[in-house]
Image 1 (cartoon, rainbow, N blue to C red):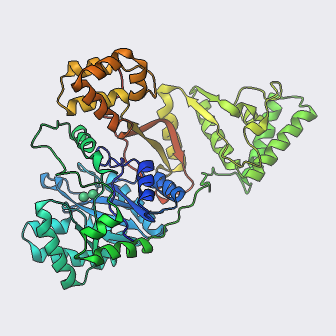
Image 2: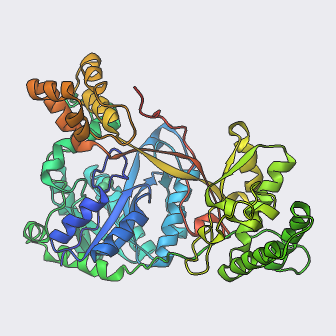
Image 3: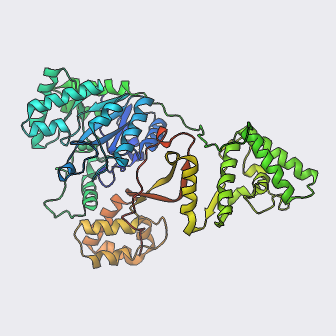
Length: 531
Ligand SMILES: [Zn+2]
Ligand SMILES: [Zn+2]
């Protein structure tokens, strides 16, 4: 059966519009048994997609539409603004890890307008990956359009040689250039024995989403729908077409449909969850983490409880035993190490939540509360049955958080420490304001409506319409406002930009890129939704 191998989720920020749950339920509805995610230059949606697909009984194919630099990823001349699109799909763990390396290096080394890989990187990290030639923005289609057919063939041979599994993407959309491109690709395919594959460059789930998607593009490019020169998709065909629609479209080249199935069969990525990759601190002598933790606790015990009762001693032994069984000693030691640094530097810190229930943490000098006096139950914090990561919720004084983070990255290695990414979404007010701009409405008109949305986190336009009668009234009476609100509702909640999580720092045992892709923190271009 046909499989979509070229799909943009909302994580192709302000370009793709497929929200993963909706995408998955539609795929299921259409009877699909596998589906790919190929966002532009990033893997933001990979895990969410993987889990949602598994849940829906659909095979997840994790990929990315990477940007390939024209020349070196390190080159940043004016001409380097142009780049080529290329679809990569992970066949297995190796491919997935290589995709992580490629997207990370594209961000850290190749960023110039877009995160760019280059041929050197593709050569180095090709294993476990299948490559598809991409949309109109691909290197080979570009050469065909420019009339450089011979060069197009050379490039196709390079990709074939590099990846082994390389396919020429045939997209059938009513775009005039595609006719010339597809003819050439079919000719190259038979001449060089490179298989064809049918793709649809999905950007939204349903055909009706096309106009909302157009608004999203306007928001992304800061233009309005009346702007003729803006980036625009020429129609409403970038939706998730059914396997039947696809089969019909490709009647003349059925092998392009069959090959999607072949590719889907080749992709068998299994991701592992629930295993911890805890960092370790250096241990004195040949002590184990458990021994060292016990030793620190006994020292602390003397300090906090000069005459410990047997109840206290038993409690400490019990906690240490639970920590040993759950194998979290390293976690406690790392927290102890960070807190020791903060104390030495006189950086203020606080601990919130269930951590107060641990005598071990109290003895380590991490919490100030005596859990015995307050009769706090340790099992709320950590217990053998659940074996969940303990959570010591630490706050550091705002002005000096950076010192703690740089200590941690020095201590555990820069490539082992990163701040967590977070995604700002189009909230109710932001959706109104952004869509208003895209519809070329005046600031005053939009502002008047936006101010009627109750100011509280998580409020939706639907709720606002119910709660605010003034908003409800102008919505019913004024067609322009109604259009604004209805349009905004269709893009409401979509991821808008990536930024740095205010609190989360991750420290890993192995270099982070063994598990997750990285990128540089961008100063949020977009302030939190306000007024
Ligand atoms: Zn593309
Ligand atoms: Zn695409």
